[in-house]
Image (cartoon, rainbow, N blue to C red):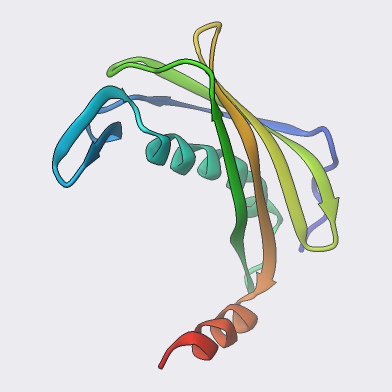
Length: 131
């Protein structure tokens, strides 16, 4: 694991809310807002940007937790910007706070955690749970 970042470092990505990002279950739309599922996926991807730069060729990042608190909805076609900030770097663990904004409006905030593991350890974990 490359020691490239420090607590307080930030990264940012922008996403457009697409039709496939709206809340729907079993093919039925629940409401016309950026779904929690899609928001979580995009928040995790934003936080993962640190891991992608830190991991060595023989390593991989795995998520350890994701917490999201909604503040307001984001609509189809809106651009949302997700800012991730490292709040903890301990051993091979990286925890981030994140904020999701549509313009100046706060859409959500939360925390996301990841660990960087050797790929062989990830494979052993798979083998332990695979029948």
